[in-house]
Image (cartoon, rainbow, N blue to C red; front, top):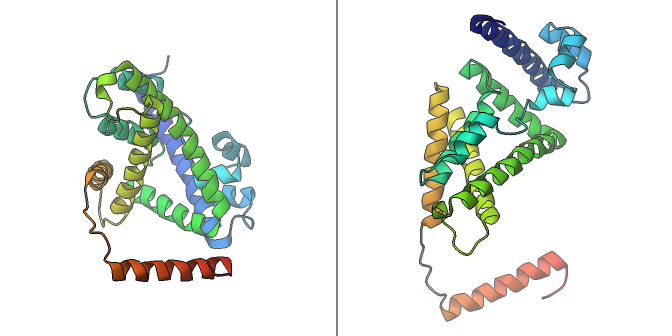
Length: 246
């Protein structure tokens, strides 16, 4: 049996090697483009063997887009199902962030740099962005199943009467994912920030989106003149889109 100290050292070394591979891959692809970069070039820049490279990532694409968790760890899943607190969204956000936390580097600057590079790469290489979204969607679908089970066990926690539990779970997951994305953008704009700040920014984003979702705005009905003008604009717009008058 290995000691906790040895396990921790191995984890740190493994994390450092993974960061080296991802750092090299994202840097090279951002500069030269995905198709122009080879695995051999990434290995040389990361100072690892090709065998080591494939021990850590299955493909060049995986090195560029980064690891996405396949599912929530069993221990965290059990803890979420055992929750009795009223705020399902808050608990789901914490679970979502903690599940992705394993992919963070130990250094906030390194993590921010990798995220910013990947965002630039996704703009230049839409297929890579789509691959990342597909991987994230798989995790989100598993989390929807988890939230559905939680709501079915605890009907008093539900907030959308008349809607099936799975539909409410999907709505919860969509709001949490949007909050994480918004919070990440806020965090990246900070000059100096910690991972705790990232969690706080995502929680603040969740509260902001929830307020927007529940805000009521009264829009006065259009006057006759406004209605006529609107109809005219709609007709013109339809004509421009279809190539013939509405």
